[in-house]
Image (cartoon, rainbow, N blue to C red; front, side, top):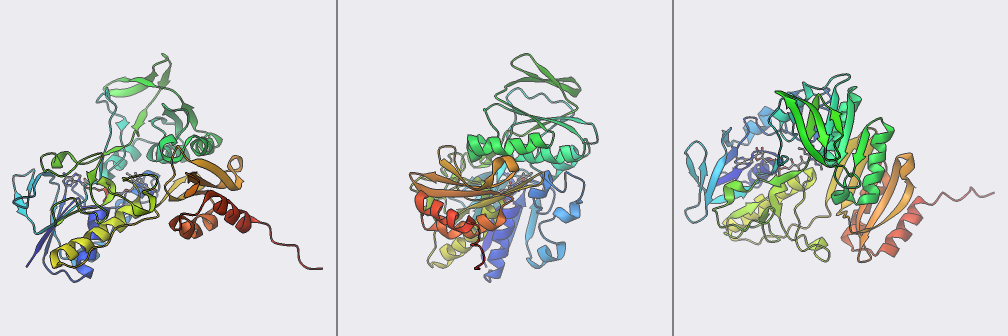
Length: 414
Ligand SMILES: Cc1cc2nc3c(=O)[nH]c(=O)nc-3n(C[C@H](O)[C@H](O)[C@H](O)COP(=O)(O)OP(=O)(O)OC[C@H]3O[C@@H](n4cnc5c(N)ncnc54)[C@H](O)[C@@H]3O)c2cc1C
């Protein structure tokens, strides 16, 4: 009877457990999770849940009876504190030590805090269900919300707060929103969606301090300007949750560094989700290895890591995890969808629509080959582009493809 331990009881961890069971694994599966809750979905936390439209039950990743069928041993509300790959044991914060034959690491990311972030009521981050509940309880008609950081989570929270009637200001240190993720041109176009909906988007500004007395009252910029705030959302990204692995001997570099099979070095230790850094064969010509923070990727990697772990335990062949990559984001009525790997250094061509109308499609190319297709409320153009990305299509061929598929239909024959 073999024993598999999954550390991180969220999306990647759940998909790993489901895959193990559906592949016929009948041994013990222990799910270790630092949070109290059974696995839940994070995307609604900045959207429907924050808006007050969904309740806690609706954000559950699986219904209780579905989880029961998996027959898992749950260790919730207790963090793993270290890993010993020689004795094959994981130590937990409650003093317990669990041994494993196979291990899947899926501990995701921890939100970053500002270096001088004070501990005042009204200052929030947004990663967990508890974070989202605390934040949604403080947003109402007229609440003055200041969002620090114009990344995806900050912008989604800004849009939801605005829709709830808050007065929202977004502060970004770089010259446009989403620069690292989408590049300056597309980041500015998405920022403009917010401005059209009444959010004040202030780019190229630096926060000097967040002030208040017990509760936050204002944010001061390095220019000396102050912005009144009832609520501050610090949305400056996440760091992979690798602290517990520091003495493990695994290679840590902004994530756990793995091979193409998602293996971390020791034969039966695999990694999945936001914490993973791996060489994605499809993009190795532009990026030697990558770490991504997308829902679809975490789900697929959880399943893939589990399949390869079983292969390692059974001595059968493992397969590389090769992904086109996909993410979505909802901000006001903009449905953002992106296939591939957009980057700030890419050449960007708008191939349909117009950013100023809030509905467009753009392609990204690096070294003259297509690396990403971004659509804002253009679902019909994005999803069919998967094959173009898999095939390393040149920029010229991609432009010709989009010219063809967006051409107006010929006039009817006389
Ligand atoms: C608010 C929000 C909105 C999002 N919206 C979108 C979206 O619209 N589209 C999209 O593509 N992606 C979105 N994402 C990203 C997506 O949710 C993540 O990519 C996904 O949750 C990653 O799953 P994961 O299992 O790798 O990690 P996580 O979901 O972060 O789970 C990791 C789990 O491990 C636990 N853990 C950490 N350390 C330890 C430890 N030492 N011991 C035990 N447990 C530990 C954590 O508490 C957590 O429960 C969003 C994320 C957030 C936060």
